[in-house]
Length: 237
Ligand code: SF4
Image (tube, rainbow, N blue to C red; front, side, top):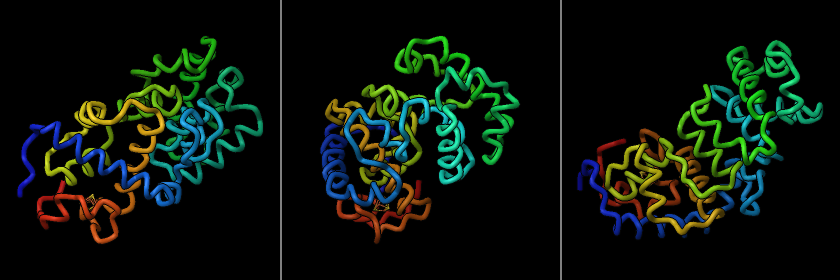
């Protein structure tokens, strides 16, 4: 059965997403193994065990083209010095921020971006008030923006990711472009914060563990319900 062009059968998607969610709930250990801290719905710890919304926002800038382990160390040092607080971070110059983060790749560009974000954020009463203003800031693309709304703002929006597009397209045999992932999932998942976070973490985990360009279906937790695997499809997304 070939993957069809974009024309979503929402009823079929609803059924499939329910099955995928059940499988993610049964495989939380795998999701945790891949760095997601499955926690209380509103906890910042989901995002690699970080301790605040500010830390998540900083990490989202630092992690681009950089290993998570390096980012976690830099954030830990910033935390020890009280610099994961945007009010304090904004009191530093761009050069001083660069010196703090110089171990990550593209640290000059990222220092500039962090300075802009810290300056903007420090004029808001809370991170929850500030988060909408991240839209359009350099370094915050659409996927990152919606991820921050979900994981920092605790708002029920689903982040559109390449992993989500690839996994859901293959599982359903319907081509779901990245830009449509948000709409398709939001039309189907129950409006529940824990469920949204778990579903995103699960899709990213499957994308990182097995659903590569050349997928390793034999070790995938979705293999029993995945159309691409069941039908031995050759088309790769
Ligand atoms: S079974 Fe294969 S194609 Fe389907 S989601 Fe898993 S890795 Fe991807």
